[in-house]
Image 1 (cartoon, rainbow, N blue to C red):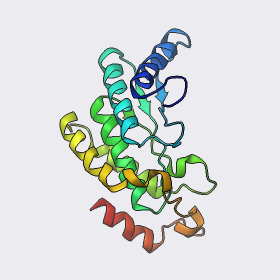
Image 2: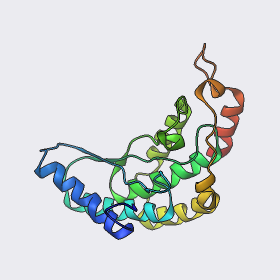
Image 3: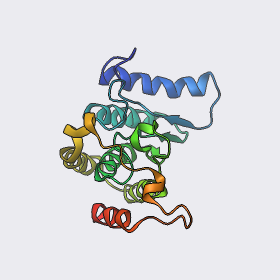
Length: 185
């Protein structure tokens, strides 16, 4: 969003056209789509959540192939904001008819800024969404936006893997376990 496609409506149209192109030109059997905000570098701003949800609804209504959405999250590992953004993205996508890949922390731009805990959170969030009505998801997303929307431009990059996990055992540090439990609650 913000590039050739323009704003939210144009980006939604391009997202749907992208799937048609995959079918018609590349003979794809499945699709991975990741609408992203050009200037913010992430998938979780309000207007992009709308874009993703609307395009997902059009795609799932008219296309009978698997479609995954991939979210780039502004905040990094071991931050509450990562989970709020990821939850909003996943809650907008799944009730709209597509599935998701695990959300990428810190805009997927920093070395060592991804851990198994973010992936676990994404999976648990995705497992919680089937059966959620779009109207319910909309209310959830609006509440989540209150927790992070004004912080996207200054999102915390979080901590590196080796600062969140014991590199010898592969286990998360207690601080991260506690933070995850608090956010999950």
